[in-house]
Image (cartoon, rainbow, N blue to C red; front, top):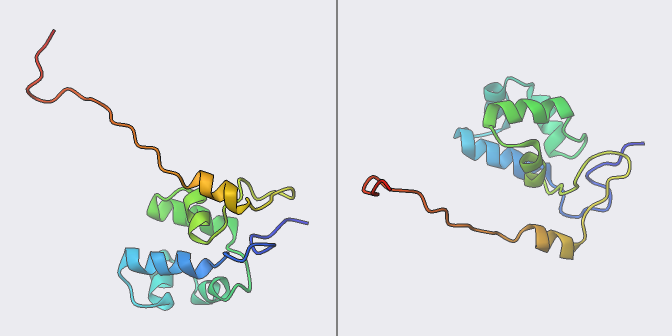
Length: 117
């Protein structure tokens, strides 16, 4: 049996993903979002109500529409698993904290006034 993002994950809420898409596309509700994404409104209703997990084809469709990676889309729902296979497990709080650290690197690029060597 496939593991669900809901299993042992109190942070899972696909409504956060849908709310983000509503803000991204500047629409007012799930019906308008469904029209914009070319899916049926009952699908979004079932996803928001946690009656079904978002199908893989839906996440791929969102990836193509928004240019967010599937991992980013899953993270917007609170699903931080590395994969979604049968052995998938949710990371611990410490592991999540380590993943959320931001590493910034400054890359020096020659500007328009840089001298040729």
